[in-house]
Image (tube, rainbow, N blue to C red; front, side, top):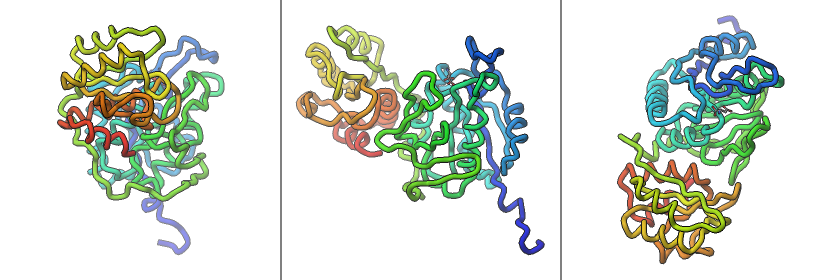
Length: 337
Ligand code: ASP
């Protein structure tokens, strides 16, 4: 090699793109972006468009699904998980990008984070505006995701979500706005890094280097229902969740995970029947701690701590699937980040 000239094969990250659909692959058919359809742009088209940006990365694509993320579920999650497993085992892959709708990105990211070892970078990316809408954010976000997935310093951080110019941990991230471009927030931490196609600034070293998966990939995900609390509420929603065969219940509670007396009593009744109950909050941000206003010790509940109801649901599903039933062991899982 000529001194001073870098060998591109040594420096160009090789990134596998796993496409699932969403607005990042969405087409509006008009610049106004009304009535658009998610998941219209194929992965080959997206990789070709990204190629024209001059990104320093070798991209290859695989289509897992072409759906809005409101339709993501067990089938797509299994396909994604196994595709990422293959990418982890392939020495010719340096990082993985999952293109995904934004509506349930936090659930997919968290499920993968809990079930994959913290190895090569895995980056979920989406967009708030379809490719042909005014001010589309898809290619910008995608270029940012390539920058993150290709960075050796992204190793050992668990699953990441890139939206706008921010990089979030799967455990922290949530969608917090319906249509703003700046729709994602982190709690309790904000972004782990800020990114642009030209720069990437991590605020702390990778914390999970060498960590294995917290949970084995489940054979099946048990039914866990979220019961949304409101004023003037009786026990019927809890009873119908149990009648539907829920193996666990997450309360999207008032304030610090609270609910009316009949609801709390019905939830306590669920616990006595062996159905675990996790108290989360319908409030956008904040901790739900044990025994603050609700007596978790007496009622046998688990407090969701920093996790919102949809993330608490995923964690509770994995706990049940792996045979954990002791409330103290469940609480320890919710205390850990
Ligand atoms: N409904 C779309 C989805 O989640 C919205 C988006 O991608 O922003 O797939």
